[in-house]
Structure formats: C-alpha cells, structure tokens
Amino acid sequence: TTDSMLLMAGACVAHDFLRKGINERRGIQKDEAYYVRVSKIVIGVVGVIAMVGAMYTPGLVLIITSYAVALTGASFALPLILGLSWKRTTTSAVLCSMIGGFLGALIWGVMATAGVAAATTMHPIIPGIVVSILCIFSVTFFTKPVSKKTMDKFFPDKAVKAGVAAPAE
Image (cartoon, rainbow, N blue to C red; front, side, top):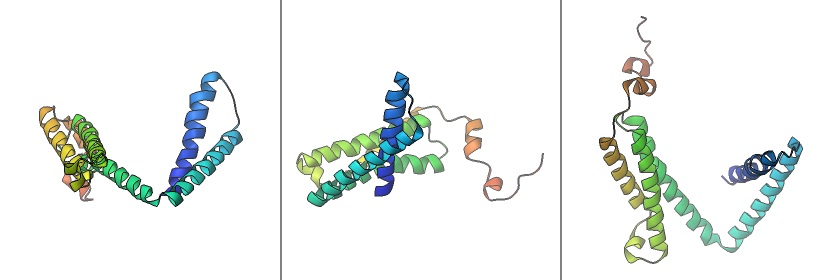
C-alpha cells in the first residue's frame, strides 16, 4: 500500500543511501534524530510527487500498477509455488525462472508499448509465466537434484507434517 511504499522510500534514502552509502564511508557521525528527520522529509517529498502525479495522470497509475503486477507475478508466482510443492525444483531453476519470467514480461510489455500488434493482444504476465515455466522445468531437469539432507529440512516426513509426533529414537 501507499503508506508502506512511502515508509520504505524514507528508510531507504535515510538509512541505506545516506547513512550506509555516504556518511559511514566518510566517517561522518550523525545521531538517530538526524536520520529520522531526513526520512520524514523524503516521505513528504515523495508523497507530494506521487499525489500530484496521480492527480494529473490517473491513467498512468493504472498502467504502472498493471506492469508492476505483471513483472512481479511472472517473476515470483511459479518459482514460489513449485519451490514449495515440488521436491525436484533446484535453486538454479528457481533463479533462472525468476529472471526469465521478469524478462519475458518486460520485453512483452515494451513491445506492446511500442505498438507491436502481436504484443497488444495479451497482458505481459502471460508470456512472462510461459517463459518462467520453460525456464524452471528445463533447468530443473538439467541440474543436479538438491541433497537429501537439505530436502529433509524443508520437506519433513508425512507424520510430522500431519501434526502426529514422530516416533522417539
């Protein structure tokens, strides 16, 4: 939601950029109140810019949201679902699927924005998910499975999963 995004923008600028990126590297020491003030100022500035932008270009908000959903969905949906439910999924396959899904949706969105007729017929999330599917299955079958020791950490036996106590050893 908007409040979360504003808080994140303020924290990123004050803590990550200003404190960690600039001041600590140069040996500049500031108290916590300074970073809180910077964060509040950034929140105010970003909030005003977002509000003015939304008032003058309401259609742009819908377009940005639509592309954000497409990029996020194509990047994370399939790797998350298969990573939690299919034991054969590998780390490399998930990473490849995330990157492929993101790039597939991004390229399709750019083509649609550029007016390529074929790209305007469907939402960018569809080709992004198709690329994600192709990546996760092809890379999974060409990479070494995850070790049994690692799998046991994330996929315990059925008795423990069902809430039944495991037999004492």
